[in-house]
Length: 332
Image (cartoon, rainbow, N blue to C red):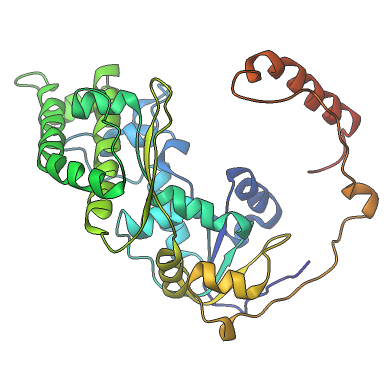
């Protein structure tokens, strides 16, 4: 185990792949770091006991006021604090899709860095579930031969989708009763209809950003994932995130630490993330956990597949519960 200790006054980003690990960091390090998650993890304070997430809160509604909700406070504290702690996907989303001005810090630590590539792939993937394609395209998208054909299709739909985004904005505005003052309307919790429109607006806005990126990225290779199942989700996936990873790592901090139980050879790591191999240093150590705690305990439940999962899930849950019961005082 390695400890990276920064001198007083040195800013750092601490990224991890799981919210659970963020919570663990907060418990163990307390005020030494400032933690921020996505908007859905905070409750708007303007509606008393009505649990409205800040993603649907007063400040997110049309003509809503600028406020200092729990999310805004957590984000401001993280931006101003010495250690900005969040999950990797949220951090990459802030930087790329929301154009947040995250200053370059001295240190960037990416914990569970073996997940970094897959997380960046997820951030840059344009996905179209059936429910959304029905709303935006009138039905399922056709099955085309390759990414270039989908690029032409998406280019043809961009103007219409941007028009749909404008329409959603007008529909949200129209929910305000005629003659009602903005203050009195906003003081009421958003209705289910308004929350649904806000959610669709947010999803479409994010999807449009990814579609534009896909349409403009003709110099990149993309994979088309479109299973034959009824109701399948179309995914346009970047073949590599090398350039995105290089930008994220080089522009976020002067010094980057990728931490994981295993990351592979440094040459492979450098190639994957677009780094100069000569600038990559590899440090290894023995596990701090006793060998007896690292055994592989094989407990077969059955052959898991899409078809067998519903039948085997109860037995799978029972097996997990039994393992937890056998180790009530152990972490991990």
